[in-house]
Amino acid sequence: MQITALWRHPIKSHGREALDRVTLGVGTTLPYDRTWAVAHDAASADGSEWAACQNFNRGAKSPALMAITARLDEDTETVTLHHPDLPELVAHPDRDGARIVAWSRPLSNPDRAAPARVVRLRDRGFTDTPFASISLCNIATHAAVEQLADSPLQPERWRGNIWFDGASAWDEFEWIGRDLKLGTARVRVEERITRCLATTVNTDTGVRDVDTLGALKQLGHQDFGIYVTVTKAGDVAVGDRLELI
Image 1 (tube, rainbow, N blue to C red):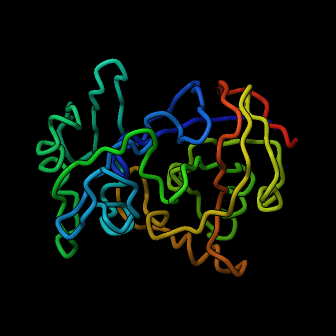
Image 2: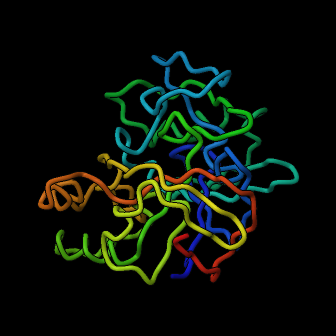
């Protein structure tokens, strides 16, 4: 099996960025993945500890957010955000949180809690799991969902960190509790990922257009992809091997 793509999301639900390589550390998330998040005005999250996704402005509630792309300059920690309906924004999430909130407000569902502030989580990201997780997605499983939905789908809908090819569809669900080698790193497969309405959104337009959840429910579940935790630090690059240990 081979790694085909690497993605991070510097600000949770506010843009994705493709990478060529990353260095994974034990017990943490992919570097700069979900480091920041936009808390809404009904949330208590302040960045002092991990908080569940319900505290944040996200694509499941505000689908237009799904069309954001991002680019992070790690040296300065400035993020450049793009959306087809908005001008480009360059901002430092720690210093310019108010600008990011104002920029994203037109993309936010007015019937939901409003974006209020940008918060940062040190040492790990605001992933959807209370443990520091990295998500893996199988290209063959993606193709199988396209068949179930009878529609082409952008892989970015799944917001996966690491994509791989060379396995059969749904094989990854059999790996729970197993160890994998990714490049020079090793990970433990923890659990399947249960999906939400964010995956129904076209990532080019920010509009819901395909019932991905209905497609998955034809199989009796709502799962796509797997969560892993890093057990041995190492480097991972596009083109590296993925091996079951």
